[in-house]
Length: 572
Image (cartoon, rainbow, N blue to C red; front, top):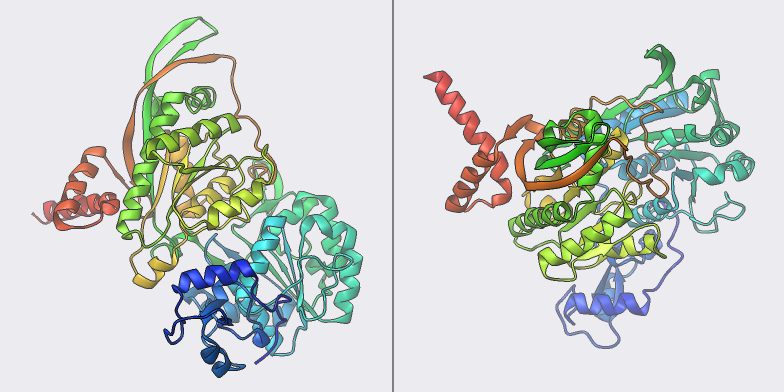
């Protein structure tokens, strides 16, 4: 078996052993014998074959079972089974790299880009075309995520390389951030001359964020436009195609020239694209958009006159910008919005018969709103349900990972800390209490609720992703555009998501007096491009209860009932 490095950690620590014993119920997970104090933390993929010393690769076995297995694998490596799109894309991307040295993959969040990179690494490594791998990511959170996911696939990289680029013995490469490249680009280039390297640029559009990053990549790799590629192979990966100012061209990406509003741009070209719609229903949950309305009463301060109450959906764009931020800070609104989100989550939990610790993600516009939302979620559940994770608290990222991994349902309340580098398939419901409609941010938020849990994959029972939003057509269309894959990003539309979020934009012209009648206004079944009224949804819920279908599918049943009725009407 080829070696792609080994986990530096050989033996399970006391915390891992305690968890394994408890999870096994004190019985050998191989033969069922009662475990004594000499039980073994057995590697399912042998450590000598690259198996990671992580809970996902360990089980509590009696000494006889573990010693009897010897230096063999108990199970094949999980996650290396090709998904249909990966099977189609791998030979195309590999051929492009063989011929030209670089390739660009566009794959929606949740499609399995990390696994694809691992498969490509193994293909090139086993063919003797590369000797090591360098993965470059936008954030330290993604360093941890890539290291963990690749370790489960028996590929071990150094997240803390010497001199920023040199892996320790026993490891097959490094994981670094874009921010580190300007300092260590020449060390990377020297190391790449020593050993043929596969470079993977994750979310490659970030290279254009800083001129120094682009210069560093050019120093390491060269320029594809000039036919110069100094790496053994380069894989560019991104969640969406992107446009760039010609002065910020990424040297590893191919482009075509376009004009946007009279301004010259470069449109990135892909060698394989995996759109969101193609994976919905097979690799991703189908999204349902729940629109939550209310009537706003406000003053036009320019005339000091009260304005008749308006539904949020009927606000003009200039009114929405000013008033919706105030609505989202209204205690009554937050309380009712949070309670509706909890209801949607409970439907999801019941649909899976409590087989997964499903979780709610509450996206707040400001830290102040996030704190109130956490209290509202606790009030709605009557438990310590909310996990508040905001930038002004110490250990925020640690708390975020803890909330993701804890073995119980909870509500993760944050502002902008759950974009790139945060994956949690147990998030099935999102309460999007935000006025932000920037395409990249909306796409990343939707993706958080669309990943399938292991239970869904094993049983084939896929939940719909539930996304609760303020009822306004601009926000609604922002989410609908993601599922249509119709949003071309420009460098002006990408929000800054790596730092603390700014306060929501206000206007001095309008002042909210109050909000009343907050309630669910309608549901959009996005992948089917159908809208459901609250009355249709209530009727379908009743049908679900009669025929014992989980009510979480009521919106989709309502669409089916309507289309069936239209079909019969047309045939008549």
